[in-house]
Image (cartoon, rainbow, N blue to C red; front, side, top):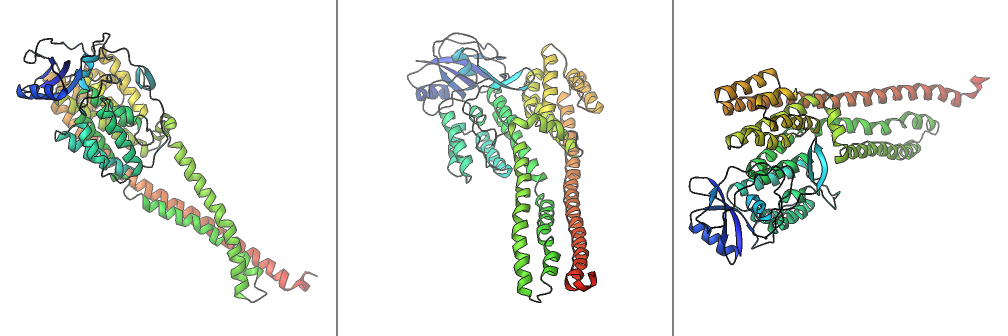
Length: 471
């Protein structure tokens, strides 16, 4: 049987070729003996058709292994899924080898995440969630480290599946492992769980799989979650302040009415019995209101409200400022990494725009990608978005003219990282103030209600204790 392979030669040049072999193990041995580092492998299915959208027609060598051909670094295919080759010895059959081997039919289109860009259609989308940012951070950090060390995606996921504590995440990791074993991209599995993996995370990993920069994509995802965890590390404090103030209200409301109604009895037990009875009435009402707010908040966090949520958040300083700086920082940082990896500007833009965590901003970046496909420069694309500071646009233009684009992208990435850090501090202070304001509102309402019930009870107590005064 013949196999297509993708490998790196001793000089680091990417090659794609074709070789005969009775099994995957035999092919792997032959490739290793020739001094090549195997990246992907796929059997020749003998089909014809077109390659993935936006994929290059890589040359095929029908001669034995030594006669291979060097090809440029693979582009980022547009949210497409590689052909599902037959599993062989647990190997991930993906990359350019699978593309060339398949010559597959057009990939069915799915939901749109940016103008002109779509993810593959996903069936059986699950509502399973229950995974927090800390657990996602740990998962992607470990996966990136294992893949970077040279371990296959299948082996890395198999290792993580056996030692991940979160039950839901363990189930997803096992499904991702099985997908890698069967030659399918793990991003296709992630797309089935939008409540665990946001769409931009799935799209980023998909671009990394198809563009040959999986380690870079995993690193960016891990860094994004690291920043999120750092931001919300102490958000529990304002939440606790507001919650304590909110739940103090049902304890204060029945205090004075219960006191005056039992004052004539002179029995403390009567007061406590009446007070407890009323607290048990008001407290569930308060708990229901609090739970309703939480449920509405969680409902609004669902993926179908993503665009509206991101659109509103951009209009709420300083939260909108932080989202903007993080999204643009992720984009510039990924663009810099892809540029240093030797990816062309057009392909690098396509891969980098997936990392923008705000959908509204990602749409604008995608619109500029269209003009880059028509031959516009990177500086023109930056200016066309209307998202970047003039100083950043000037740095990019200067970098292109001077041949120092990499250095200028480094400076731009540093600028947005600093801006994101500053915005993060403002957001943390804003959240603390919101907690304090909530406490003051709840405390003010409680104090006013206490004063009102005190004087109202005092007046009614006189009428009740001395009815002759009413005559």
